[in-house]
Length: 230
Length: 45
Length: 225
Image (cartoon, helix red, strand yellow):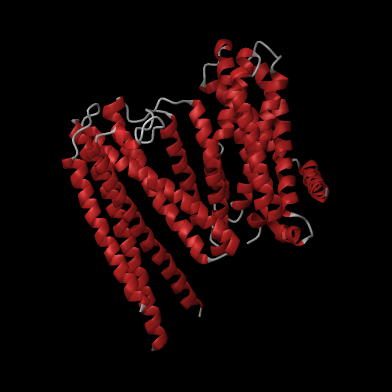
């Protein structure tokens, strides 16, 4: 009975996700001390950093799914690309919102045209375009292959956009976790790092929970269509 | 707004949006499940 | 070699059609000229400021006219199953891509050849000297724009509201080209040489080469269902 074990597995995944989310909230909001320079607003980073990593992961999966679909023409791969794009757009948008709310007390403005913000906003626009393309092409397989092309081109374009936007301007503070001169755990307080790690795990679990739900949904739509055809 | 105000705003928006998305996903899921059920019932009868 | 010959053949067909009807060229040209007037009304373009704003304004005008061209690019193939017929003929898809790209580059280039001097006349820019170099930069920008634009024009071909969808998906992807072209033009206008903007030129050429290659490779999948 694969269906039952699948359901069970999903239940375990859901429960684990919930546990980590609650632990993440506790560590992020209560247990971790406020940052020495930024104060409590730094707590937003526990959401911000996992969100952007999840967003990047999504766009990578869109690329993988698109390549596989063009190669093998399996509906499953297209489903993966579609689902990942949808969730990716959500997390990219959330990343921008979090960054904006964090920027207000830290930089004094909601938005600044710095490289990383701009890059994230462009990513969001690219993948909103991707979803719109999917919505506006009626023929199914046509929509899938069109979207796959856009997914691949969009992904290949990201390094170029990254480079150009960085040359254009950089006033963002350098990444505080990944710095070449120091190992990660020397840069920040261990409690902060733990809070970040827990939140990161929570986001990854949540992501896979959402993605599996989304993939199953896609499969069911396929099934419905197949049965109607008969 | 105090620092905590910003923090609460951010956490509220993020978890609110994620919750909303998961709920809508579940709703679509249920609708598809019902549709599948209906189709298989129709075939049997 | 075969690719080149097929490309030229297809390009000749498009040029011939355009020569007979000149729809795209005329609309693009008049749209570009109109934009110059709109710019004049929207900004206080004193001779002192115009050199500063010229790169951005010009490239914006070219982007819009180029988009106009792209939306018309496959118009001839849409009706009467012409695209299907074209795909059935023993022609490499890469050649089709190259021909369409070259065609739009050609249209944009022609429009720019007239609009740029017009800009210089209308806003009385002091020096005509950087014009040839600027034209070269703009041409490289055209290549990047049309290469990616052709792929996306083909991708959005069967979409509803495709004229609206195309710029929406194209412009975010165009960011490197937009930035690189404008920075290079700025450097040329201000200092008369590229100088610090040289990396931008490399980026621009890199973009052109990368997506030209990607386009030739990927176009098989773009037009096939």
